[in-house]
Length: 296
Length: 204
Image (cartoon, rainbow over all chains, first blue to last red):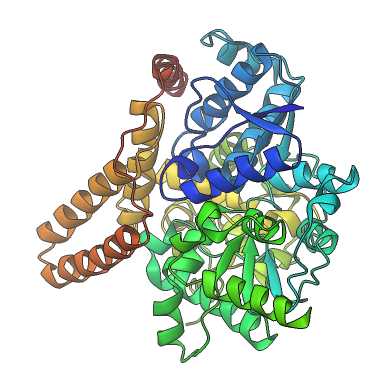
């Protein structure tokens, strides 16, 4: 089975590990991710603050390319890219004049037939068809993750149909459950990390992340699991500074969901590139494995 | 701080309200000040008394100056919590995004110029190359930051920013999160044509 794949700019640069993991996990689960031809930047959240027309036009071109090449479903792991593309598709469906105006400049016109899936939706399909369950090797006993969804995967600037609850999404929990991992319940799963504020307004973003980290730590979690490269980078790269500012002793690795699935499938951490985290995550994964060996 | 009185400006109220409603696509007149947006606002701690419902009120009453220049417009992180919880489906984050653009068009000095600079640098990189190059756009942003602080004589701010970014950069190198290749999309011509169209639309 082949699915169209939009990696986006982050997954080709600072979050390249997420790209490696996504391709690998889906191929292990019998779905090949095919990167769409000559895709462009989706404009992310910045375009909406600078130019509304471009915020729709940029993702539109990618939708057109995927449709022209005959795909019926596209998987977008980055939460911001997913949000922008989904919103653009709906805006074009609701405004035929805008659609015509944008289409007139595109080599591959947008029709509107493409299903846009977040990585969670695409993974849940593999849970439903049983592919994921079959591949699980490790029990990962001792992993106490909090599932962190952030903003872009749950809340949208335009009315779109979403597959999960906006205030208490459960997609990640359901996937982890298929791996026999019980996620820790907490209050900040859809809270905002500040996104680009980490660079342009650090005080605000540090305050936001401090609350997120404090709640995760006080619930006894030993890692974060996320799908958003921006959330991952922020919580990972800024965590040490934030914890020092707030007298928090613990440091929690921030895993992508693909990393946890990969580890449960017995893919070595090196192949998943787990060593590319600021907060060390390989030690925890190794400990879990040793713990499991002892139990046998 | 106490909440200031909102000046009522009947002459300005209607055209301003219409402009914000058209551009943001939000029906501001549906707001009945229930303050669910205020209760959920992620940056509530940062914006003091200035809550999303107050912003709507200001627009409705024609208080243009304050609506375009306040902490909420610039601190808003577009988490879309306010709009998701609004009983009348008003996405206030779309209003702050619209007011950011309007403030820029009127050449008002933003309260947080670095926020505008950041998003400008990001979108510019995405349109110029078809894909965003992290190193390039961050370089452009940091340059702008330094120039702004330099002209304001704030050398300490430049030093502290350089220090923070250098530390982040070193960390990214150490963990192989820094990317040195250059990303481009051949179709950037189409993107640029669309941008020309967008500029035409804005002047019409």
